[in-house]
Length: 252
Image (cartoon, rainbow, N blue to C red; front, side):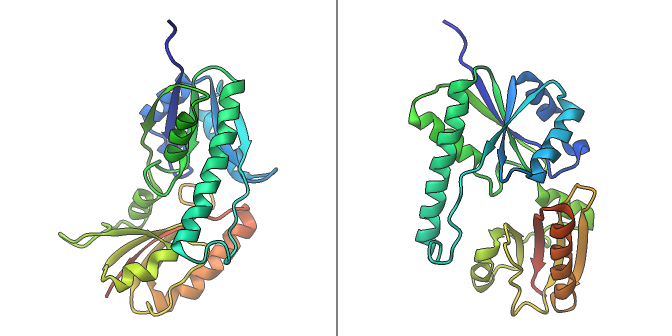
């Protein structure tokens, strides 16, 4: 009986090759190939992942898998139930695409995850879906990475919460809900737009494309820096081809 193949979900940090952990480097070099999601033909994040692997695992083959289209229209995602349904369909399509690669290519595989797999990333759920589909079997584990949340705090030289106080990690679409529920420290990820209405007196620590050459940081009272952040979001996306931001909001 042969040992089952191994799948590793590997957090590779927020962009800088120096922020890949020793454990992640070992996991990458133990794999036969790496699977990365490809959003478009010229997806700049694929090139960034290749550069990172050139540094830490130069012999590792990279298999880009075209990411299935996801319905982001307001009609399809207007309610939480609608949004969850769209995401479920997207996850199933992703699982089918990854399953096909695993069927066609033997060997151990690493799934490269931006930041850390624990924060608003779907890879763990999709690997579980692949197993449930039953066409391929494997042992699997997760290697943590340095998250954008940690890097945001380090860059701004802050603690993410006040002494003895809780912190809420949320998405842009549910920020208002967190504020209305009384949260005083809110970390926000996955913001398609910057919705900060009614928060002018709050303090914000914002960062985009953390760990990369075009990293950008802004902090201050929301009412005073909102327009600056909007301009930096647009500039970064135009110059780099992509923009992923994260920010902390603190009630005055």
